[in-house]
Image 1: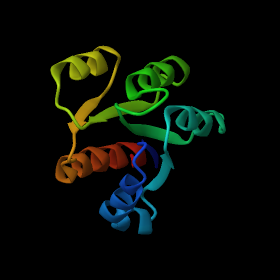
Image 2: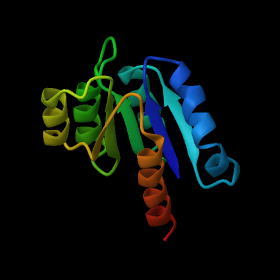
Image 3: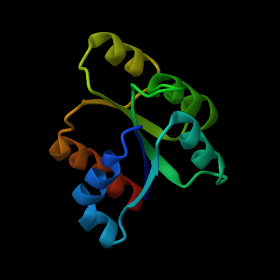
Length: 128
């Protein structure tokens, strides 16, 4: 199962690789990373159908923000689930994200226990 993490902060890649090392090593999970909304859409558009089943995207990014990315993904790839990540637990972004079809909304620092539970549910569903 392949997930895509989208964040303009590059240190997020190391964090996700560390937190999901076991799942990646055992072949249950493949991680892909994009550092902008535009790059994320290029990755999703490069495979037909995309192998990515889940996207975790930061909201606050230069260029295309996470909410715009969410709308683009939902329009082009409605089967892909998207969760948003924000440094601010503000209700305005939360409501916009949920109205636009986000599955979950995480605030930074990311609670990896909750996030891993979410990903493990997806892995189980994907493998059944």
